[in-house]
Image (cartoon, rainbow, N blue to C red; front, side):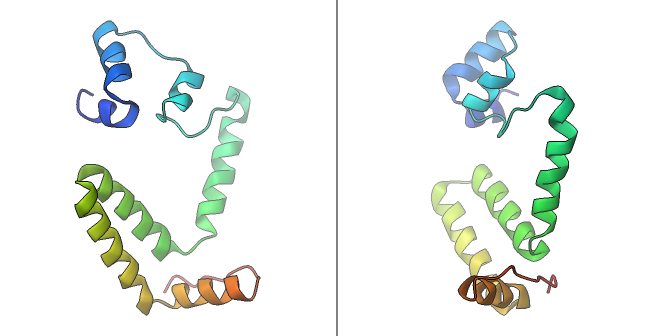
Length: 116
């Protein structure tokens, strides 16, 4: 609505969309950052599954922390968001997944996360 859309696409495009009621195309939505990717309708489900499979192959702990940091940063000031990100990053130091991820990176192999 009137609060989140300007943060997502900028004030000018949000004003145009909200005040005129004119829809934007998928390409315009991608260009403005409202969506990350655009696919033909018949490919959407397969592409969504590919993205979900990629995310699910990663450490669930790291994914959850990253998602929370992004959402928190989006709703707060940059300074508060950076502070939250730093705290979340430090919280990963005690996880086995962080150790496994860094070791796998150094050894140039695929990480085998255990979600702990």
